[in-house]
Structures are given as structure tokens and as C-alpha cells.
Length: 220
Image (spheres, rainbow, N blue to C red):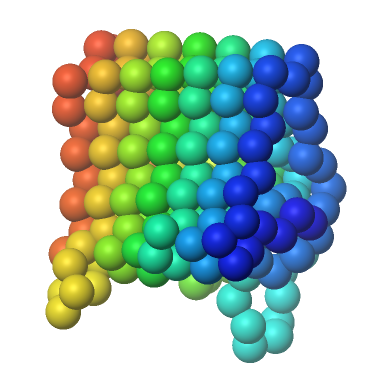
């Protein structure tokens, strides 16, 4: 686990390959960003988040957030941009199998060649939401300008096999924007409801100005 907190900054840039694999933690199995801190991953050839989080169903009372990356708190920022290949494979958490964004944080996955989410989430846990991405409260997740954006065979036991956005009526809704991507594929994702995308409590998901958008064979 890498923890970035207290207004700190962590940058991965101009690397050939970055692999964050098989780390176990309740909040951000791979990387945790909070308290106004920043994580930037830019101009790398390959980034892999694989098998992070807690894959075993947990009977305890606490909830797990963000199998690969946890980003929370006002002024906390996650930016993943201008990379050749970014993959999230087999990461697991109850809320946000791959990425969790909450409490006023901002996250951006932009201008990458390929971004692939496969096999993330917790299919056997009834309260699990957002197989790939979970955005809560007054927070924003933007996925823009990527050449290929793929959500395939992710699964949760509750809502949003690929994406779940949950707002707060008294404070405003979570925002998810998918825009300017050449291709978006959401295929073979599984959830009890909202097999591809789930929205709740005033959340806003916008899929606008993209090239080809394919949403098929998702199951509830």
C-alpha cells in the first residue's frame, strides 16, 4: 500500500512499466490519496493494477473502498493521463472495485491510448457497488479523450457493474463524465441492478461527444 496524505504529491512519469499487484488493504488496496493530496500518473508506457483489495467476502461490519485506488477529500486529486496502456484487472472492494472517489475529490483518466477494466468488483456481496468506479458525494470522475475505454466482465452484488455514482441531495450529486473518447465498450458486466451503470441520490452521469459507444451483453 502507498498512502499519500496531508497535502502531499506522488508522481509516476516517463516509466516503461508500472505494476501495482496483490496488495491487501481496506481503503485503496494499491494507493490511497486523501487530505488534499495528489496522485499523477503520466507519460508511462504501461500501468497495471492487478489483484489489489480484498477478494474474499468479509463478514465483518466495516466496508472496503477502492480495490486499486482510493481518492477522498476536498482538493484531493487523481490524474492518469497520456499513457499508452492502463489496465485494472481483478481488483476488489465493496465500493469501487478498481477506483473509489468521494468527499469532494476529483479524478481524471484522460488522453490515454487504451484504458481497460476487466474482472473487477465483488460479485458475491449483496452490498457491493461499482465494479470499476464508485463516485460518491460532491465528487467528480472524468474519463475523457482516451482512444479506447473498455469495461468488460466486471461484477458486483448490488448496483453498477461498471460504474456507480451516488450523490447527496442536500449537497449536490456526484458527477461522472465520459466525453471525447474514440471508443467506449461496456460489455459482459454483471450486477443485481444497473449491470453497466447505476445512479442514485441526484448523481449525474454524462456520456457525450464520443466516437463509438457499445453497451451490450450486460446482465442483471
